[in-house]
Length: 421
Ligand code: 13P
Ligand code: SF4
Image (cartoon, rainbow, N blue to C red; front, top):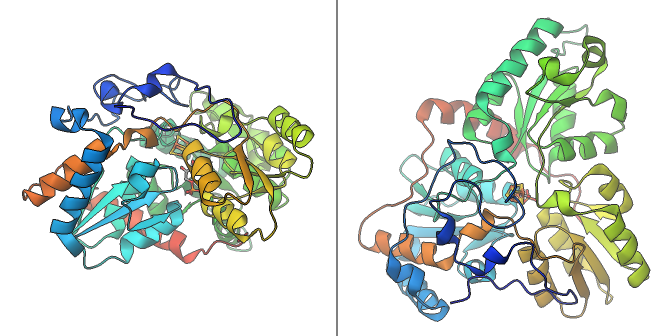
């Protein structure tokens, strides 16, 4: 059985990794992120591993898995809600009750009070967030526990605590004349629950790519500067758009004393950018945009703000996955779109809007390694286990962590996204 369906309209269809033709279960017991964009990243030893998926699910045809998922869902009825992120493969998306970006999915997790179980087809930090926001008696299931996020894994609680200690020693604790504390921690949604809890404990907040600007405004009302983790690009792109000069945004490298900056640089800083990035969005380049403009005069280039700043600057627009989807949906005239985000979403937009020409900026098909791990085999397995009365792959955030994380997440949910396409 072919496990991926990643051909792209108008692109040669070369993939970044021949292993993508295999089933994700071939990589469950292998350390690392598996094939796709983050294959070269180093997964921390603490990254969850997935146990062996029973053979009947590995060997079933796509049609059989589809039928089994439909049957299990019919038996479970409203006891189960399936949430899906835009980057999921089509074979999963068709079973989602709600499809969205990470902000919308966090919201959705809070607003499905009748379901006993939320099956989260996305990545680990999203499932953790759903568990923090869901009711106490609701279980959240991640069909493949190895569906992490290499960017989220680039910041861990020990390194952030260490950075905080160094910054507190440098800045002190006293607010300025306007009552603003020296530094506010802001974590991107793409982070572990204990980092969200850290922000909750230290007067900070969570942001997503859709509300990052509102969140930074919130933070600057309360603090003189921001420690932004783990995605340097989202932090830089957002603060730059708000007028913060690049020289006031030093990188914080957790492996170096004072993050690799001098005391003077840190004293002048407005935003300290953690040394993290997304391997999917790092693949997009200014050259690709130049080529798209040469090959398709009038092309509209839209990229995700996890792309490096020069790419965002060269694009026509940048926005979250939901922003990109709405921009395409709102175009009334046939338009050519070159999109800089994950391939599954770009392919789906191309299929849904045949009146437009839609292609991925990167001609090489290279999906998010971890979103790729949610295959219908795992979805069929977790649903049939539920039918049999067993909850497998539950993602549970410890109560003390969840309480502090909820504080930062509630602040995030109150900070509504500013721009829509
Ligand atoms: P969105 O918040 O735009 O859904 O993005 C999530 C993500 O992981 C992008 O890489
Ligand atoms: Fe993480 Fe990048 Fe995948 Fe998003 S696309 S889940 S940031 S690795």
